[in-house]
Structures are given as structure tokens and as C-alpha cells.
Length: 92
Image (tube, rainbow, N blue to C red):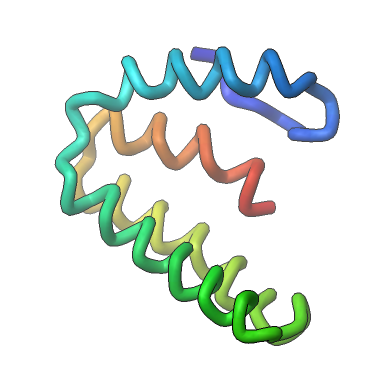
């Protein structure tokens, strides 16, 4: 699957289709690997719901990138590397 370079350059329909394809491609990733990343996202979401400004959570968002890179490097799987490549543009 071709990684998304810039989210602003694709339509919502294309994004949904890419997400569907990604779901198929990443089905061999262990649940706990995805859960660790999702926990980080949820912590950020909770801070935003508690009225934190973007500047207050920006560093936490940026730190999601090395979290994914570490998981991809540690597991060394093609799927985890693809997962990282798929989510990195959204984080940036």
C-alpha cells in the first residue's frame, strides 16, 4: 500500500478506502501493539476534552512518532513498519 504523504491532498472517500486497505494489511499486528499506541492517543484525547490547548498536548502528539518507530524497530515486522508509515502523516 502506498503511504499517504499529506492528508490534505486526499478526499475523505480516499482516506476511508485507504483505512479499509490498511485494516486488511495490518490484521497480523498484535492487539497489544495497537493498544499501546491507542492508549497514547486516548491520553491526548482526554486532555483535549479537559480543555487543554493544542500547545499543551503538541509534544505528546509528536512523541507518538518515536513510539511507533520503536515498536516497528523492536518487532521488526513488515506490518508494524507499514502501520507506522500509515499513521505518521496523520501525526505530523
